Length: 112
Image 1 (cartoon, one colour):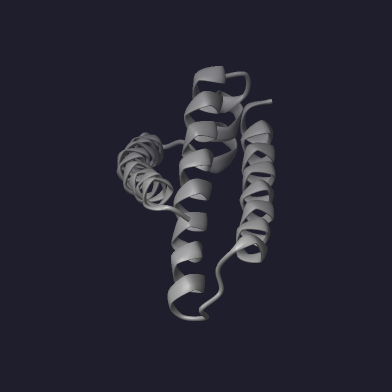
Image 2 (tube, rainbow, N blue to C red):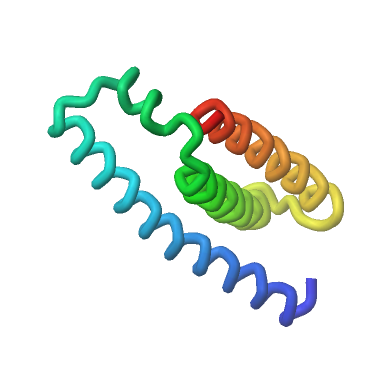
């Protein structure tokens, strides 16, 4: 990849990491508040049913996690295994799609 593309990948990794930090804090805070409020897991799931704001939040969480993890794996593949190029990018793109599909599916189970 050229330097401009590498910079964009680097920037996406940093931005997705920042988003993940924010999303994790919000998620953990919400779970602590709900559990300390006496809600069981079943009651929490009942309350999330039909809440499309939560669906949007967790969908963005999923996309940030998938983006961050795949870029990190790309770096590991390049540095440790010396695996780069089209084949590595293809495998990682498929892995990214699998993470997105399973994550969004889980969000659907939470909200729908």
